[in-house]
Amino acid sequence: MHAVVCIKQVPDTTEVRIDPVTGTLDRRGVPNIVNPEDLHALEAALEFRDRFGGRVTVLTMGPNFAASALRECLALGADEGILLTDRRFAAADTFATTYALWTAIQKIERERGPVDVVLTGRYALDGDTGQVGPGLARRLKVPLLSYVTAVESVDFQARRIVVRRHVEGATVTLESRLPAVLTCSADLNRVRYAPLPALLAAQEAEVTTWTVDDVGADPEQCGLKGSPTIVSKSFVPEPRAGSCRFFEGEPETAAAALVDFLIEQEKIPGFELAGAKEA
Image (cartoon, rainbow, N blue to C red):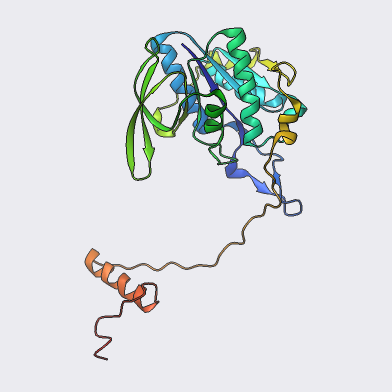
């Protein structure tokens, strides 16, 4: 079993600020973390390895300091961390990102053997697009299993997997062939803790670094050059003034008072207050 987990190092969005002049993210002094749902993807891969043996490779793209995210994954139990780092990868949108990751996965397969499953988080905190997993599946020409909340069964010999996934208002069970791309939700599992010795060892662990040339990528399809997305403007919405009103009492009384209030405010078209006609 060989699982490749694609992760992203993101700013801790609870502390992100927008530069009022440039309209861009002000990341100064903001700590970087591994995208939380990517950790659930890593946990799923580690559980596969615990049951079936094999190896788990963690892959990311970013500046040199993104190696710290890979070392965190190594501390959790990943076997190898690979960092795509090159100025030509910079400013990539999800289209160019999936291209870069796809070229790296192809190199992994050439040099380390076939990949049975690719996992990633459902979405990244900073972009919130959820496009990288589907984009990878499209480029790899393998099935996509998105929004996975449980793995019912997996058989790497028979190359089959059964998962549960959320859809709007329901949960469905899907069976698919392998290899496949899984985008993982936080409901999928509970991320393990890294033991202290592993944390210390990971600080000195070697991280493999690959450039555009190393993975044989076309520079015209990487980074800003390969990104069709254009961000013309970003801004922080003005806070809206508002108020809150509580309706107290027994549920039936409170509900009736709420309905009367909404009708008075003309929030429910076509309804009139009881007794309005008589008045």
